[in-house]
Image (tube, rainbow, N blue to C red):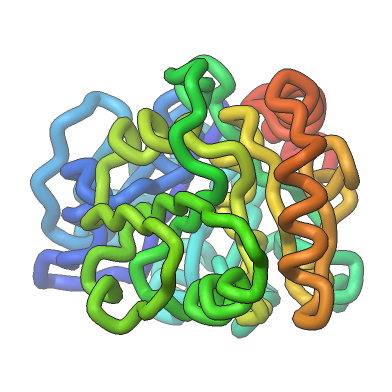
Length: 301
């Protein structure tokens, strides 16, 4: 076992979010790492199914589990004060930490705090790169049914702004918004939009390659978006906000993305729509953020 992922904090009641991830209702990249390189431990009572996933609410038993794997790297995910004091402080393994967002980014109980950009390197932090399984995240369709692809449940990544701006062009475009079903009544546009509810990992993957270009115009400043990796690994290049987190391990303009601002978002999107290259986009993704590349970087930090 190379990697033990500790996901979330210690608790005595089931965590609904974790169960949705376990059940495949929502996509979770950490589970892919656990499946390939080791295991994932939820320290709350959860209904687990796979041999590489564990529900261990008792901190002493978590420590006992880790002590049986002294050579494994322990990766602590999300801020969790109880976990830090009751588990991380009592193990001798190599310890990594990642907050998943732009808050609580540094953890003194770990050897390395993983961050998404050079600008966030402080204290014990080092820049890292997530990875995606190229054998899972791959094109499923050759025929393109949509011009643009949006992915997001919350509708807080400037999706409405993009769609409103798109009304300025003369032609007609077809858009797929994965996860945007609950926002369908809020959008007014002359373009054709198909909305889906939340989909499983398989459902998201199977839809992505129907589109020519992805638009990920977030300005939230969170961790680097998983959907960037998922779309580009499936051969769909992205229009990305120049003000969003930038990491040169991911960003390879113009092969897999182009950077835009509010003033030129539609211009850049339409340019990419004319020049996109699915095969080159996927090639760049595999070369830079496959699962093996992810683990090589984790080990080198």
